[in-house]
Length: 136
Image (cartoon, rainbow, N blue to C red; front, top):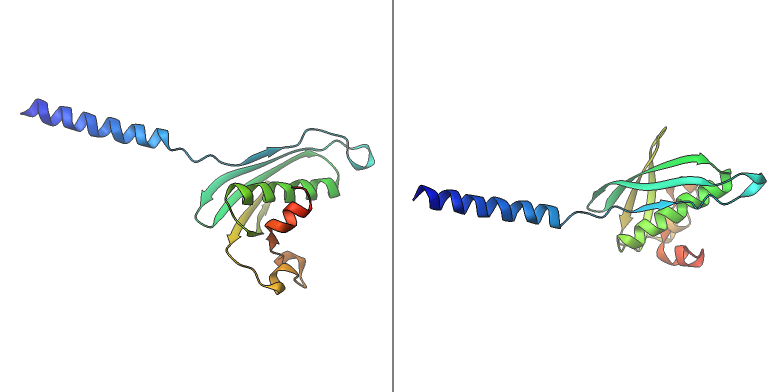
């Protein structure tokens, strides 16, 4: 009888372990291709999703080199790709820290005109059509 309990426990544990390993969350990543950008600089950046939750992701941006404009565009491209990977139509970035650069990207189901065209750019909500328009 004891052998049956041990066998049953072994099967349950093995199935639980297999399910945990078989279903990992694929976190989003984007790396620059180290091309020359403005003023002879080379864009060398990484955009990494480090944590995923319902309705939001925490990302870390590593900037080794690059211009200010190209770096900003790279971050927006990363957020557009992340939103696409999460099947989100709208998103906004909330700064968490500057060193290292960490952002919380929040995904919204809807957005108002005021959110899409805010007076304060820090309150901007981006949309999937804007990402497509930019070629992201």
